[in-house]
Length: 329
Image (cartoon, rainbow, N blue to C red; front, side, top):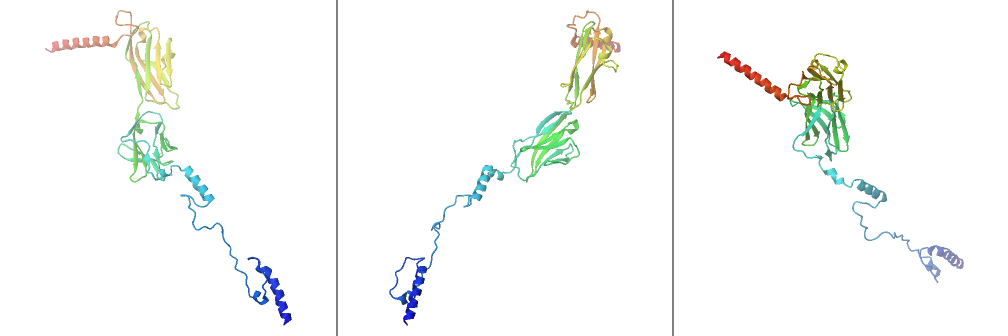
């Protein structure tokens, strides 16, 4: 019996240090049997970050550094993200057709600025004289076999370019946006045909200098080099090649030509023709009268006004008509 009590006392001393790990040191009980019945208290782990009230999150952000970074980057690059919800519209308001005048051979540019387009489609359509529709482009794709049409996007501006414009290209062009109902912006194009303008009939004396001017209107030569020549009568050789004292000055940019013939003779009278050979062919003719002597007082500075000539012609006609009327009576 004494040996059993001694063994229990040794075991109690061995267990005591383990029991003191989670609690304060305990005094050795006076009764060895009572110490064998004690159990260590349970270990409780507490999270010091847990509070009774949850933290408030800032609006639009979450408790994640990466997500907050993405949110800030999106908000910065989309300061006007509310524009996404605006319907598409034309930048410039127009209640009537936009009028465009162009010269033959020029390049015509149609501007169509569309804001807040989003997923809508922009098309260019031509309306013919019989109200038929011809699809030219859809977005940046060309849907016509006419290579002169080209579409380009510059910011929000859908530009339609028509190169080498011709008179038959005149008509209505529409910028179409695929909204519901569709949006349309109309352009009225007029391509003017080329024309030639020349000095009026001239009256001069022998020995004076003839001065004639010729101008080509509503023509854009493009890359072609314009050719203008002067002829007299039925000659097919340029005037400066068959007669001396001839000066021809031609401006290829403005398509104007100036002819000067010095020391006129009676045989210099006749029809003078200004001819455009390229890029198109057209010509104009004027009549030049060369009078011998200075008996006509109306001649001043080598040019006689047509008013006196017309007055004389009209008087002659009146005399002839009155004579004929007397014969009839």
